Amino acid sequence: MEGHFDSLARRVHGRDLICIQDTSDYMYTHHKGILKEGTLGRIGDDYTLGVRVHPMLVVDAADEFVYGFSSFEIINRNNPSENRREEYKKLNIEDKESYRWIQAALNTKRLLNEAQSLTIVGDRESDLYQIWSRIPDDRTHLVIRTSLTRVFVNGKGEKINAVDSKKRVGHLKLTVPVNFRKERKSREAHIEVFVQQAWTRRPLSLKNRANDGEEVPVYVVVAKEITNGSKEVSDPIEWKLLTDIRVSTLEDAMAIISTYKSRWTIEQIFRLTKQKGFQLESSQLETAHALENLIALVFIAAIRVFQMVKNRNDEHRRAQDLFEESEVELLTKINKGLEGKSEKSKNNKKPGTIAFVAWIIARLGNWKPEDRDPPGPITMLKGWITFQSYLEINKILSG
Image (cartoon, rainbow, N blue to C red):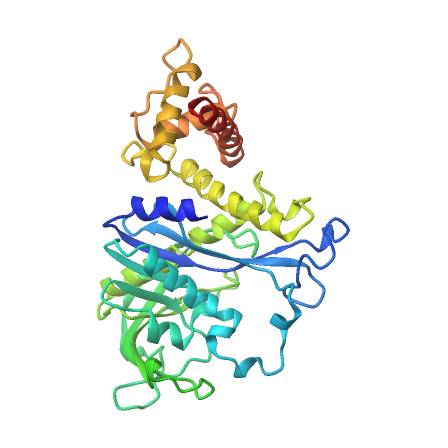
């Protein structure tokens, strides 16, 4: 992944970025007979074989264009000593698996030190006290959905209710995307918004460390869906979001909610790697090492495929925002051999743009301009795989 990280750092110089981290499990128990014994640990329970993948996805704050990964960790619990349960709570955070949330943020700050700003987004599992005490600075911010157990106090040290009717700043409408895993249909949600400043205190169970302090100031933004008792909404939105960014108005709160909503992008990437041609959980590899290499390669390909499908008609974004300069040059050469004689069969997209190279990749995936449907993920993946062969041949000829 080092080459990917270096390329990413160059491409996002001076940009405002949203960095989304999450964890997804990849299960291989059904291939137990293929895997070499002891190569994979257990996830979720004492039976399921698999690994946990924890990436930090970097997107543009202006339009959520996906650039790549600033951190990428594969967790394989094949060492029994790492799965100990007794005394686990007494360990320092650095010795716990949950430290991955902090480590990914630290990796991102180091790698993207020339970006204009970073806003790191996470779900409830990432709501660790230490991430609040260690990560934010003048150019690095957090937007995290808080855990249910977190206690907030006001400036007087009094406990406060995050959903306080006196702190309501207004209402908004939010489009909730489809979620096939949860069998959730897309809908337009009516949301009431609450905002207030608060302080969150260091948990009593946390070992006292001078650099973590006794409390940290945060702004609490609550987005609560108004259902009026409707049974059609089985999972109404109730996001309790924390941030170190100053929030006082509905407009401020809408910006924070929009930033958190970008987390849905990483869920789409996870879903893409598990189906639509990638099918990572169907791997027939025998060792953890080979499997981990495959996972890294698939994730890099997945963001390329995802962005090409999403921006296949984007004639404003530079191709270099997604591809290396050498890749763009080779694709431009390949383009001539893929065009037909008719005007419809030519690549009329603006040269040097995402749309231009997406057309070429789609053609390499056997898509035809006269096809009724636009190229989708499977077509783009086929084209991407074919392009890798062109790259290898070009490398041999150039060497």
